[in-house]
Image (cartoon, rainbow, N blue to C red; front, side, top):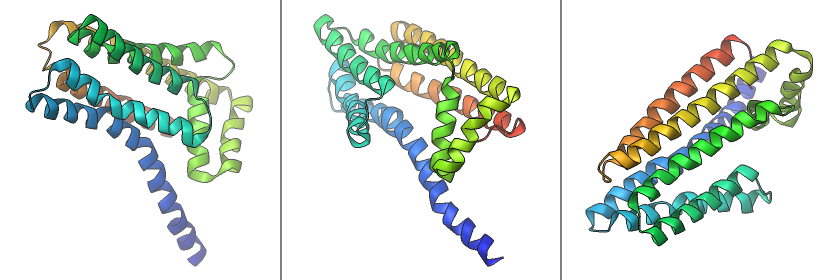
Length: 219
C-alpha cells in the first residue's frame, strides 16, 4: 500500500509539470499578448505599434525554446520567421489589418502542416503523443506507447483521425481569423479572435481527451 502511495506522490509533480508545459505556451502566446495589446492601446499607442510590441513575447518564447532545447524545430522556426516577416510587412505597408491577419496565416500554415503529416509514415499526433508519454511516464513507456503504431490498426486510425481533425479545424479557424481581421473594427479583432481560439481550443481538447480515452489512445 505504501509503495502505491509513494508512486502516486512521485507521479503528481510530474503530472503537474506536464500540464504546466502544455498550458504555459498557450498563456504566453495568446492570453498575455492580447492583454498587452489592449493595455498599450489604452496608453495611446497605435494599432500597429501595439500589435508589434505584443507580438514580441511569443517570438522571444519560441526563440528561447529553440535555444534551450538545442534543437531546430521546423515548425517553431517557421512560426518565428512568420512573426518577423509579418511584422516587417505591416510596417512597410503601414497596414494594421495585415498585422492582425498575420496570426490567421500562421494558424492556416500550422493546420496545413498537420494535414501534410498524414501523407507521411507517421502523423503529427504520433510524435505529439510520444512526447507527452515520455514527459508523463519516462522514455521507456513513451517508446512503448509509440510502438503500438506498428501492431495496432485501430491505434493508427485513431491518431490519423485526430491529426486530420486538428489540421482541418486550424485551417477553418484561420479563414475566420482573416475574415474578421478585415471586417471588424481593428480594436475588436484581438479580443474576438482570442475568444474564438479559446472556444475552439476547448472543444478540440475536450473531444481529443474523450475520444482518446474511449479508444485507449491516451499517452
